[in-house]
Image 1 (tube, rainbow, N blue to C red):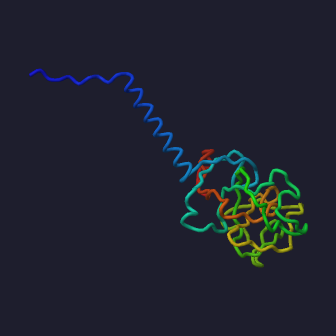
Image 2 (image 1 turned 120 degrees about the vertical axis):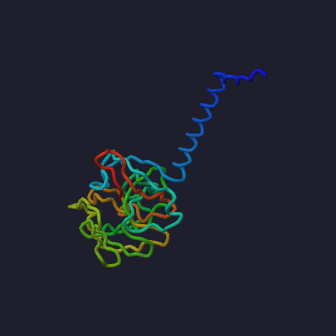
Image 3 (image 1 turned 180 degrees about the horizontal axis):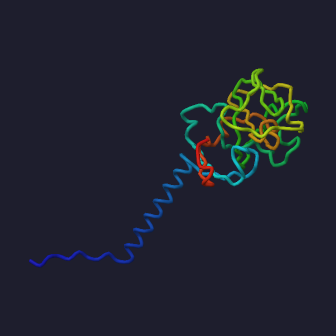
Length: 209
């Protein structure tokens, strides 16, 4: 009996297989970014010295489905609408000059910010020399550094606000150069995208957060 010789694959068949493999790889990458882990690039100096401009980080997008956000977490989120306008349009309600914004605008922005949670639902917050005073106690950095706040009005906001249920008060580590909850209010938990857990670029800054 003459053995059968397998037919060679056509060039067209190989191309189709390659297209399918590439499509599956892209689909998997998009799925991972949409639901699991997504990379971000730091756009400003508001988190210095923890994170520098153009440094790249990885963000866990699913962790807050299983655990609650807590003070100390570095988070990526959508800020309230109005942060691009500044001034009175940033905060959702009028408030005294010596008080942080007590309430955000009603809608979230399409922009993405990164800050650190410093207080949670039900906490009272005021600001002294750039440090949050939470429930009457000054919150010093624990395991991370900040850039001190000097001279600007937002360094000292002695009039207290109470963080509403389901909201979090966020600040940048660069306390004198950060657009944060002092300006636009406590952030609804639903606007959090995820927790930053590692930095992967540049090589000399690779590590956890």
